[in-house]
Image (cartoon, rainbow, N blue to C red; front, side, top):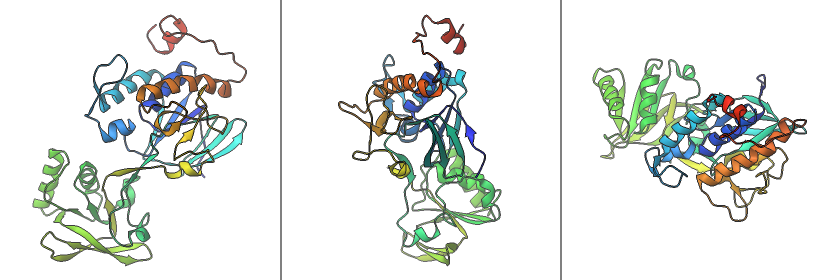
Length: 342
């Protein structure tokens, strides 16, 4: 087990509500680490609609998902939160009163006084391609995310997909891999034009392969891939030699391991009380779209409000002997000092 990272508060989910919670916790001198399954900060906003306009953020008539994320990141800069991306929380154990040991799927361990679940509708999980028997190869030779590039050195890699992830990893892993084949169902890509251009140059120079079609069957033993059967658009069959496959078919929203954390659930949501948005487990809070209570509205502004009240109660767990004096950022010189504006 890796050595535990100690922090006051661990936030699960780095979407807008999780980011604003950093601000509210930071004003009250609580240190924060955030874990997110995505490879970028911003949650659904950044992943699903980075360029889609949002019209109901108070005081901001129009902002994009990415624009809101960027502004929140600027706002929390004084508090220097630490982000752990591309990781999913697998286990939460109680180790004190309060106190939690939290473990990710990458083996990272956190010890904290407070856990805040701000995971939207759950965790984004990769869509599994419709290939018979693919489960037998998963996490041995079929991977849906690249955690450490080095593990793909000298591999024969089949990358499947036509979006940014597929093209980015084709270009990033090309220098390490023995050979890369990119497979897409059509010769038209949704990725950044510059990436497509670079990929086509590598193909033209004979440095990698591009195939048009779909995987119909995998070959291999004991989870180790040896090849993939590909059906072209004219129904012609061929075989691609590969010992690793990286399918990038997009993401889907699932509750994921949240269901195993010992929290009470109601229709795949976490019930909370509305004084502080605490769950049935003292010291674990849920804010944003993942929680439910009478009158709940799934709005970003509601999640901001929930984060502010959560921080007040979290302070009691982190600083049980310290009296909390409520202050306004407009008039408190000590808060302004924390924000670097005084």
